[in-house]
Length: 120
Image 1: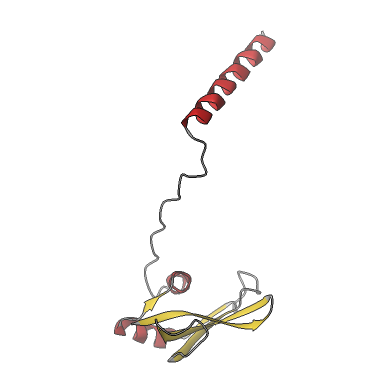
Image 2 (image 1 turned 90 degrees about the vertical axis):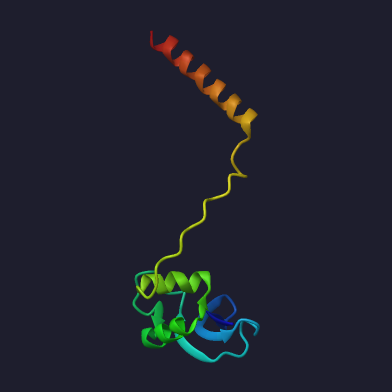
């Protein structure tokens, strides 16, 4: 199975990525079939050279059945080569549990009553 993904290059703490077509079983920075773009996260978001894509070759590989990684899919959606992926709903684990929400609600009501009494 073919994957469109990023292979890391650059020095320590200075990342630079090549967007490559590779077999999904090969290592991240290992063997690849073709380089189809670059991504430089050190450049500002609006800079023209931040993401460079060879759209002609990417359309070919997408038609052959190569599957992009999540980040590469975001780049391709920005270049209008594919539809953006739907974002999954965020987890509710970090939110306060039911009892904590009740306590917060009671505290807010109590604070509201004291403000009304002070205003009168």
